[in-house]
Image: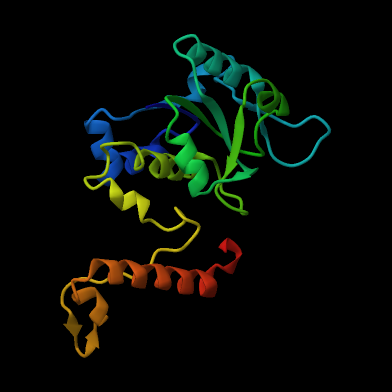
Length: 223
């Protein structure tokens, strides 16, 4: 998989890709992630990438020319499955979307900033718009990092035990069941006997029941 992230703040993205599962995926060459500084495509002496909105109002708007130049340059190098704009008014990202997008080969992520991008960017270049929730952040960099983490961990060979991802919350529209490890007895608080029984079928049934109960209690909307 190849991911190009267009951003005004590459430094905001560096740390999430230098640790843990995502770092190992990059080192194993299962995914390539590039941070592209939009400022390099800015206009004029001061590399301008924003301007005041037509019609007045507070805030600035990211201009179309630098974004268009950047995307067109990238598209000349490879064919992209999706060009995604991270925006609060996009489709809310979920596990089903992560599963689907993890099968893409090439993706561009555009990180918004200020009051967003000129609407013509969305009309002419963007193929999908994604939100990570109904709230507003300072920019699209943190949502982009979350998006990448969610899809990269699903790539074959990334997790040491690939069945682990199949038991994550939301994979079957249920929350994951409670999990335990050693010690079996911590100051009188004990692990459920069923998990120590060695009867895998009964353990699987117990876990499914716990998932159902937890989902009914915490996220009934998923059922």
